[in-house]
Length: 138
Image (cartoon, rainbow, N blue to C red; front, side, top):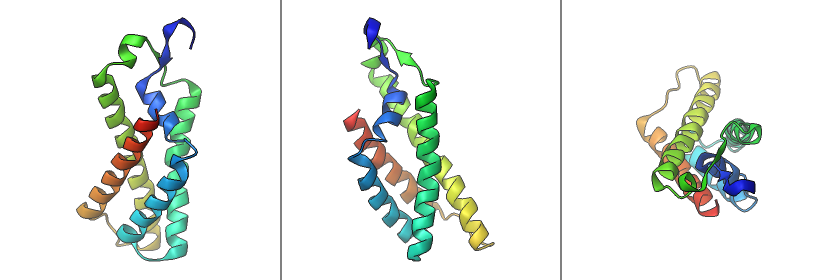
């Protein structure tokens, strides 16, 4: 980029989440995560997968494309702390947004449904793994 600037670490992570190699891998793995944590209904799992990923990735892409995540200078770009903070922010974005979307959709299907701590842990761990893959591509 001109003037020695780069995308901020958070912008680079959101952009890397849309990498053509990563998307099919994450969709496959996320389908299995949802299958085992939310029930074993193929059609319902596919719907939950696409609804949750569309909202979280769509929102992440909108933030990236809007420029709201900004640029950084070369000093910040190489700063490990900046990358750790960006990783945690992106992880919380995806995990919390998808947990909210999936929780709302599941409560519509079954009124008494609630998240179990183990299921939230599995979902959060899956998102950490996805972001590690994105970080390696960034």
